[in-house]
Length: 444
Image (cartoon, rainbow, N blue to C red):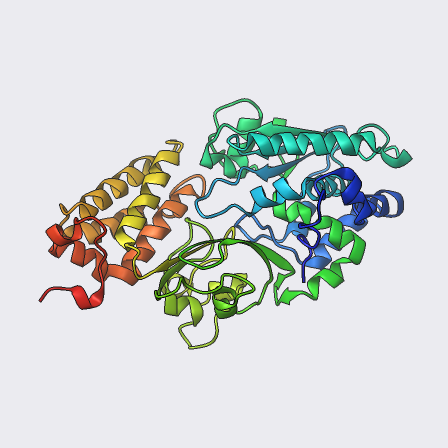
């Protein structure tokens, strides 16, 4: 079932005219003309849709937490700061279906009682910002934005705001700080944004994909949406697929699809590239634990692993991972896990805002230790040192970036410790160009 991408290949779908002909903005008409804001929230709650930015928190429940004091403005902010390595599905959606996001923003803003809303876009994507601004102008000219939308008395101004190119601004409170013109440092919580968010007013921050689902939910009903997917993982999910596969790209899947089918069927990833074998998978972006190929395909109990929030996390981090933001990266046997882990660690060190000591210092230490292991200067003690540093970071920072930095390192050592040991025991061989550890190559 294609809920978001049904018309994505239609020529001209990025324009208001073509999008409208394909049924666009009918959900806005239905919501504003025939439904109360509370009814819209209720439909989203019925759908069971969970935040698609990584956390997976039920969106309708998040909306219901929004404080509604009299005389105080409320805001909706769309988090389009997609900066995590391996994740590019929001970029794909905004570039090809800008009006789907605009329509979702109108419906969501109406439901939340927001009269001014923002789309905070990763600063490097200036051409996407221009696409969105053009779509907003088209929607405004057609009467779907601005004053007195569709004669309802409801007003909405929609602003696209470029980010500063900082991964930390994907965290919702850092995003709000940046939107206010300040350095993008995460805030201590509580208070949460639902009580004191943008300009210290009640605010909801949702991901691009999350907001884009609302038009289908309003047109078809929350219960209809909940019939797709599996269990608490309702609906569909966009997956950014990359790495050593035959068909990299963005795919919309029904949650509950088997991991084996997603990886190996020609409809999706098309399997690992010819002549190679599956080694490991990062299922949800660089911040989630890496798992060996066999644990991605099967749970520890031998059951088929599914592309869902619950199934991927089955067994905890010992044997499972997370769906996260859907940044799906596949590694075959030619990939060096140590080098990849070092690369991720360099990213998180660079993107740490420096506000919390465990993250500011710990990410730097992990990067340096991994650097010396990768370059043939490590010791066996370094492996346990990395595990210890990751434990000191995890759960001890204001925002989740600390956890995001710690999990890839800890999981790589948990599942591929022998590869780290090989780098240390055979420094000359490990540092040769293109050198990759394989079990059969370990020297006696």
